[in-house]
Image 1 (spheres, one colour):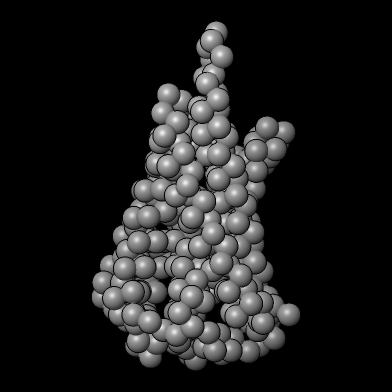
Image 2 (image 1 turned 90 degrees about the vertical axis):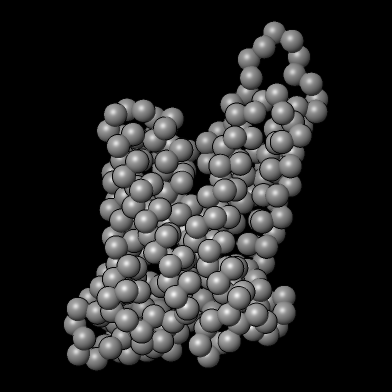
Length: 282
């Protein structure tokens, strides 16, 4: 995330403003740390389980966790799905490199090339997701959930194009904002899994949806929430609060909201790792 920009002034900065800014910075660091760690675990799971079973000549095992994942004889569908999984790992690794401040400062060339890889992976995943939902057929969930996924894909393509355009024009601050929006939008699928596992961890049962059809009001709300609305809205609030040096109340409120989201996200990561990702890694 962008670093805090401290105001320049001759008078001392009030303690309340310093404290609110510090809490905001700490909440951003905590949220980003949990997100990056959780995404790395997810990337290892995808590489080990999907990649390992494919190399072993048993891609049909993908259907253990993804209904209609591998279809015997459907070379186009299987190729798109395989590329989708491969670019998921690339996206997470490139995203980690992009968000490390040391890489931007010490190795700008690495930052630029990993950024190009990230944009390529994000756009490929967005287009692949649209294919898997609307062309391949058999995707689980309701029409409303599919529309939310479509909205997420379009947001990814928009943010990727705007980040690329700003970088080419050397508008660095604008580029960073659009790159952050791209990272948040591209993490929608991961947010969905973590949110679902946090929900199941609390209720210990599929409350609000039917696990057989994978439809229901909770899944609809979660889809629109994490694919389209909440992460991007929260990012915009963080960016606004980081610039609002004269508004400690806003900074404190955003920091509290982000801290709550971080706790929920961390809980979801733990449940997903213990119950879904971890057993297929070891």
